[in-house]
Length: 535
Image (tube, rainbow, N blue to C red; front, side, top):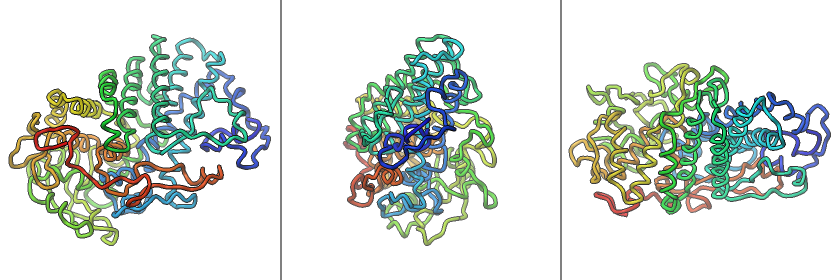
């Protein structure tokens, strides 16, 4: 690529669009331009065949931004300063430091640049195909284009989930016309919709070519037929439709009938790409299960009491919630949920989690961060880089559909979907439209100790079943359900480094009463009248 930032390809974000901001109009004869780089069919195919690997880490499978998002959502808790989690999960909440020299700037910087890097590779491939490039034959050409549009879609989708705004650039954009022109930013709603549109092009492209298959090595790191790829694309669209909501009101306004359609057309088995040591792995799962202290995993971060506490059948959960934040201390849960506690008593190991009396965090950083529970569902040691790494589950899709059904006044149909994981995995008694059985040991319980509603059971299942799958989904749910602590940023600004390069003013979100901050928590309201829960 022979001149200006538009040609530098590729890991830097909107500086690709803003060469006028700095004097970067320098010829580099060692860097070929995009058209020459995509003139070789098999080489061009490799650009898109490796694009999922660049998207994967920042979509909830690496330490940035997973630890920040998970701890802000109170899904996991940690007393360590790594990955921006200490500052962002501090209570009371603080505004995000968007300075380009912030030591934790990768919380929003890494997703921004990595997603644009992925988009840039996809744009080059789709553009070359649209100009007439044939990659060996029609099926391989269609596969490359479908993959390119899919990667555009989920990359823009996640930009829309993470950031307040982004610039939209696809294979039709003439970057040379943008030299000297300030980038145009679209708000997150437009960005997310644009992502879904690209996903739909990927679906249409796949459906038009009956013999597409995706190999297990590279691409999506899981062998997929055309039908399975289309189903995966629909499930990602369902995620984007729901998780883009920043407020309770926006979550209520989601097109829930369309969510049901997407879920019904979505995955039928868990999406679990196969890890390759030091090439493709899930570092989020590594630190969740890491063993550094004797006897138990989870020595870096642990399941929060906000996640596991509603399962408690004693007064421990109610008392913990009622205690002033800085005075909270960890307690031992007694629960019927076999994902948290085994059958032989409160200290026996559950299917997903176990009990560990040791505390590993500094009290000076807040005892409210302490937890006696460790996470073990995805293994320990090197399991994060070998074998399937579950990234999207059928249970997640079931529970998205269950939420849709409740919101559409079809709660009886939602009961069946909530009970699937509740009974099979939790070994808990079935819920009805009236909620869990109102008995000793009710799971889940409300924060005041009362037995929960069907809505509480849905959210509880979503939390327990989703823990450890993706490091960011719990945050998306919490902001839409209005369960984030007051002052938590509901999304992130364009990174300070990018703003500085573009010579735009720094801005940020978060802090009590600040712009882009979560309002006071309101966890007890339901989207419509249910037993034990008022709208």
